[in-house]
Length: 146
Length: 146
Length: 146
Image 1 (cartoon, each protein chain N blue to C red):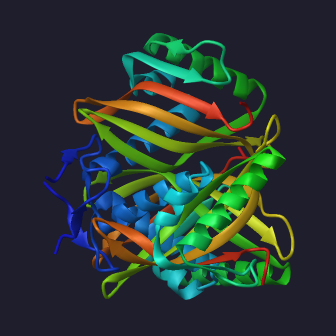
Image 2 (cartoon, rainbow over the protein chains, first blue to last red; image 1 turned 30 degrees about the vertical axis):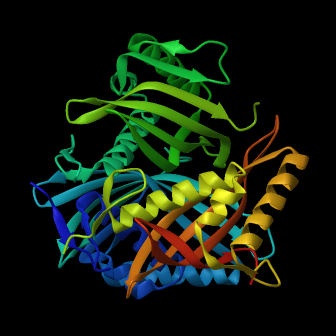
């Protein structure tokens, strides 16, 4: 059984590769402040939960608003932020995927020194959307918190 | 010649992708303190050599014991450690693979600031094991040491 | 349409994977000081532009000379440098590829502490070369500069 699918970029690829490419696009959208495109990478009822937040962010509109607010805050503080995902494992569960990865946030002040800001894990439930994937549920756990 | 194989996760993939996925699982096992699962990613007679160690660690039992000791030490010191592998090159040599990568260790103290702890290179000889791969020989070289 | 090709390493792979593997080899060449091999990963008329440089470096000979000078400078200063590329997106444009990625530079002084030195983005135009790829145009943007 060969699982291949036409990706949004028009390049055939396996599921593992599709998920790698999906995350790269998603992180580039987030870090470039494209809040609407970022929110489109979640399902309409997508959930973003984090051990740093008292409550999960629920639904695409709330997810877009949170990203826009974070982007505005970073601009005000003169910071560029890059999200790196790595050490990705992908496990099919029925027609969904469970994707677990590490995520680093790298921050650079304008005219200043880049540094690691946070190390986290990210556990997603991904569902098919057309020829790509969307996050239905994300759980981010910061390594500095219990 | 298309090299594909059913990976443990049930997703068809090329050799390069299999090795990426193998390392992601292996690093997640190590960082989660799953010493037995980590040791299973080496052959029974696997060797772990490092320029930071006077002697190589030889055999799965010794490799498991070293991982368990490192995990206990990190817990005692309140540290979370993440191993990232990247810039992976894979070269077939007969029925083995020579895999060379960079590895970063990121450490986060409980309640504290994440930071890069070490930068290393990692050169592995990988051999087939069922539908996956195992490390037969690993050589880790820390960038701060000669 | 399945896009596969025999890579230089003799392992069939998709375009996305080929580009990942290409960058891994390219960064290992650069960081090992193999200036000629590094320059061969660019086209004869390849361009390396960066917001940190007043002028782009044009042509393979100039690109090799710049790498050799950087290597000599790092050796004099007792530094090991590792370039990590990640969050790679690849978009076909005719018979070329537009590849966008993040790049981190990690530096380790001999006997000292590894640290993130720079965070950048890297946008390449890649063209086919035999069964692999070459950079025709690279634009590196440091996150600390406007």
